[in-house]
Image (cartoon, rainbow, N blue to C red; front, side, top):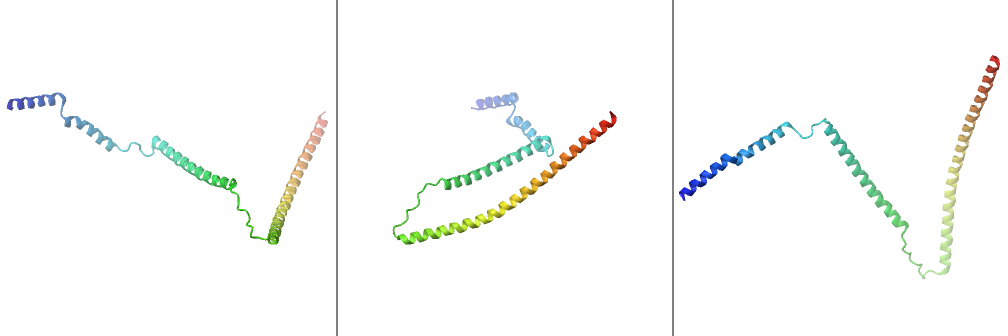
Length: 168
């Protein structure tokens, strides 16, 4: 046992001499890591890499914003379309109403619709009149501009003819 222990110790010492200890192998790696940490960050502020990274980050943020915006816009449009294409049949009118009250109710609704239509037509007529006047003013100004251009072109033609006739 004592001889075997001595042989084992001798073998371990030979292996250490041949391959090195774990500490000897680990030390250069750790020293390199510490030196890298002391040198600074992987990306230095103000460098071209930092600029590209910043632009990429901004582009990604904007892309996420646009995707979120389109998602919620799509949801709202979907909700609108659901409301438009809703095919649920409304409840049939109950038979409790007697005929004269139905007729009176319909006449009242018709009168209300007519009042709303008249009010909308008055507002629309005011807007259409304003639009028509604005269009007429625009056309008159355009007409005056064309007349002035035509008059100038004629005047230049006459003047050039007069100058040419003087030199012929």
